[in-house]
Image (cartoon, rainbow, N blue to C red; front, side, top):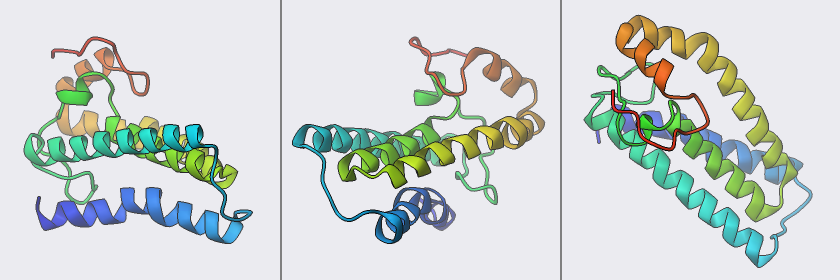
Length: 161
C-alpha cells in the first residue's frame, strides 16, 4: 500500500468513521452508555463486516484499479470484480455499516443521524458528481457496468462484465 493510499484512508473513511462520530458522541451525546449485550454484539458484527468490506475494496482499488479512493489519485482502471460485481459503491457501504455499528454499540442517536446524513450526502454526490466523472473517465465500460450493477442494493449473483 503506497503513501497516497494511506493518506486517502486517513483523510476520508477515518474522518467519517472515527473523527465525526467521536465529536458527535463526546460533545453532543447524552453520555456513555452501552446497549444490551445482543445489540452490542450485533453492532460489533456490523462494524467488523463493514471494516472488512471497506478494506477489501481499498485493496481492489490499489491492486486492480492502480489508484486510491481519493479524488487526487483516482483509479486508472474500472474495478468491477469482488464486491463491485454486486453493488457499485461497496466501499461506502462498508463505511456506512461501520457508522451504523457504532450507533448500535453506543446507543447513539447522534451517530445514527450522522449515518443518515452521510448516506444522503453521498447519494447526491454519487448521482450528480462521481457517476458523471466515471462516465467521462471510463466511457461505455462504465455505462454498461452502471446498467447492470445497482448503486446501493446488491445483486444476488455477481455481474460478469
